[in-house]
Image (cartoon, rainbow, N blue to C red; front, side, top):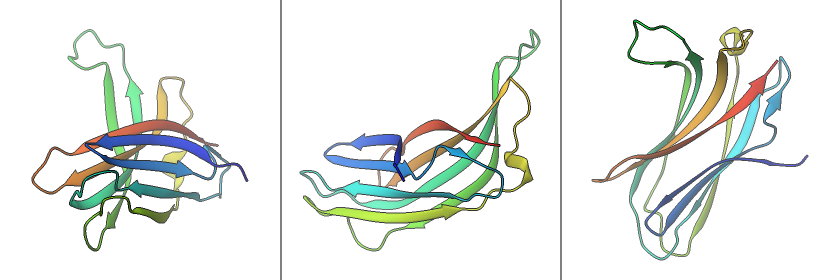
Length: 134
């Protein structure tokens, strides 16, 4: 099965890529993928990585300050043992089981997976991309 690239985060020399097996899931399928951590040229201390499935709702409400509202459906935390060493690549498989809240029926809603890299004493970096569940 062809892997689908979902997100890429660069932090200094460190790169974190989230790749899913399939960006379009049928009902009953599981969201499977792998987080790749490439140590690059410098040692970085990653506290943990969070994978968050959420729905983004676009609203055309003149009374609201926000056009888009995010509602978290599932969070998955990946705890790392040790530092990400220079020139080292780590592969961390993940599996997220969907539920009925993942079924999106409206044109103004979309389902996204957000990868957040929590850095020790640093600014957390994230990237997100849309996927489909029918």
